[in-house]
Every structure is written in structure tokens, then in C-alpha cells.
Length: 258
Image (cartoon, rainbow, N blue to C red; front, side, top):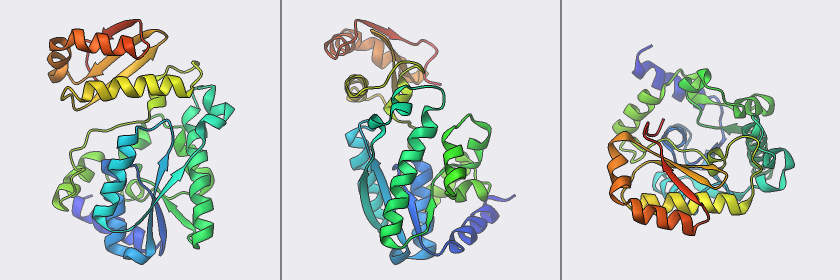
């Protein structure tokens, strides 16, 4: 289907929802969904909710809030409690399912207080082929994924975002800090903070996209291949900082971010 027709289909889907909560992370997909919802339904019918938790970087939450304010709808920052859920903390392969359930339950609670029955989130059509346990939570809880329903791919969402002037059009994909910890390793606040501090330090070197994967006392750094030299050129500073944060061995993944 032509991208223009998909966009019209998206607006039709959103229009049928009437009044919505949009789960907004500040990434390309959820920002585009928020903008489309705001344009179709108007400010009085759209509430943006940003989840706040130790699994997210503070600066990412602040950035998401600025993005929402720039678009125009009311914004709520909601504290979520993943670290109080033993099934999440155990960090098994279905960790994302329990995380998503916690977030959705918070959105439903907010919706009931505001008289909003429809919850939406920003999964796109490409996500159908990925292993995403969180999608099961959306289906179980009746959360709508309008971008997916309209057949919009990540590439198309970026293209439409550029046309709408959204600064998130070319923002790199990101995930929560818990994804840096291998399944089976329990998640705690100290581990998340160690990973978060490491990634912040590397980004301050001008690296656009980074993952610091935690393997016990080993930090495995992933960056885009064209940014490997930034790490190598600053290897002493990077190694020193990450050791200070609690890692013993610092490794650079030569295959780059993937």
C-alpha cells in the first residue's frame, strides 16, 4: 500500500478511537503516533503518558517530556514499579511481558480517573516479525497499536515524521537499560545505574548510539561501526570511567551495534 494511503488509514483508525492515552517514550514511533493523534483528535482528546522508572535514563524521560510539550497535548509522567515485581527482576526471557503489563496497568488506572478507555502504543509493522513478549501484554489488555494496524514500517514512519517536521525522525532506536543485562541475571537498581552511567559517559564523547552490555564484571561496548574510532581514540578515558563505575574488564565489540 502507498505510504500516503497508510497515513490516511492511520488517521481513520485514530479517529475511530475518540479519546486516547498515548504511551510516549520520546522515540520516533511513539512521537509520530502522538503527533498524528493530536492532529486528528485535538488537545482535549489526547493525553500523553511517559513512564518513569530506574530502567530508563533520566535524560530520556526529560527529553520525552520536552517532545510532548512541543507537540501540544497534556503530559503526565507516571512512576512505574518494575523493580518491585519479582517476575521482572528475575529477568527471564519473558521479562518484557511483565514490564509492559506494569506500564499498561498504570495507564489503565490513569485512564479510569480521566474517563479515557482507549490506550495506544507505538509498535510498528516491522515489530510483528520480532520476538517481543511485550506485545502479548498489549493484546491481553486491549491496548491498540495504530501504526501496526495501518501497516506502517519504521522507514515509513521516519519519512512521514520528516514531512511533519518532527525532530525524532532520525532518532536512533533505543531500549530500556534492562535489555543490557543478560537473561537470568537478576536486575537491581545498582546494576542499572552502573550501565546507565557508563552509557552517559560514552555519549558525552559524541557517540550517538551506544549499548553497554553487562556480563558480570565485564562491560561489552556496542557502538555503530563508524563510531568505533571514537571509543578507540578515547580508550583510556572510557576504561577508567567504566572501572570507576564498577566494571573490572572493558571490551569493545568489533562487530558494532546491531
